[in-house]
Image: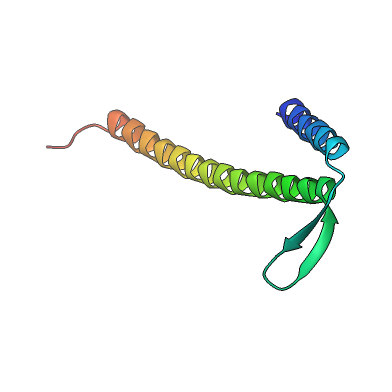
Length: 94
């Protein structure tokens, strides 16, 4: 898993460098609270980095949620197997 994430990170970094080398124009960026001038390469790098970070954050939260649900379900299965084994070993009283 570490190798895949490292490769993805390196690819994103290389894409950012390639885009940055080609886009050196100054652009006006008007965001909610202010307006500022940025080089297009810097703006692309910032936006790509924020998107990458948000993607990993969302993925991480979903991954943790699934791991917790798998853990809970494994505990339930373990308890049910113990009950089933107990019922099999106990003689039936009628």
